[in-house]
Image (cartoon, rainbow, N blue to C red; front, side, top):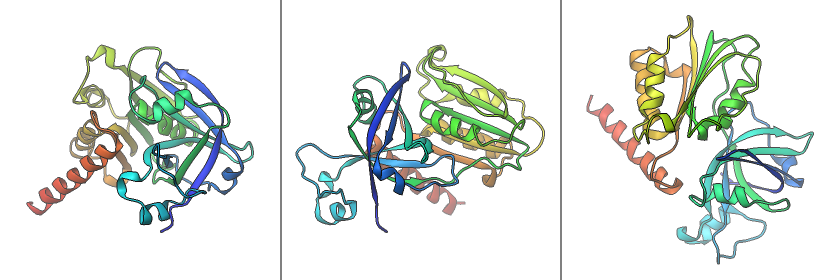
Length: 275
């Protein structure tokens, strides 16, 4: 399957909070970027390695076939916050914690005219309009997808969002017409919270509204794993009514996180086989 690369240019950037940077991109390449029905549509942003000369335009199939793996561009996965072909704009929000990481520092330093290359979009979730209510749980990495989902929930439909950020002042606006109740959690109130119990405890304390819930739970991998167990085993949420995914793993970059996910899949498959 061809890995088509979309090449855009930065139009402008905006600092949304102390740790969130918005990059608005556009250009001729945007006309070929498809609309999809998913609110969690994601892209793989490609970061060419210094000192490596790649084919132009960048062809990832050729790179994978002709270059050693340690020369492939680094990639980071991000949710498309919004896409407006009429305005010629694609928006991605980046978490930025100083010099740590790859994509965050790039976004903070990005200037109009800079190139951004991406593969995608993927995605699998959009809020079920027939659900009685919606639950959205995550940390700042999931905020763009949560905000995009809220814009698609029918007017007046109950929705509960439980969201974790570093500290007061990191909250972002959550537009939409849903009957929304938001609880913001702050790591500054829960120490470092290495096991993600702050989100889990908040969901455990939640009194579920009546009816069928459609849940979206994304964020740090260990926290998400425990939330999935709680929702499926203790709350009886069916897998068809649950979109759940780890976006990142504490202490690992994306390459290390992919290794972690592969090990987790092997562990789960072994547990199933063992009965």
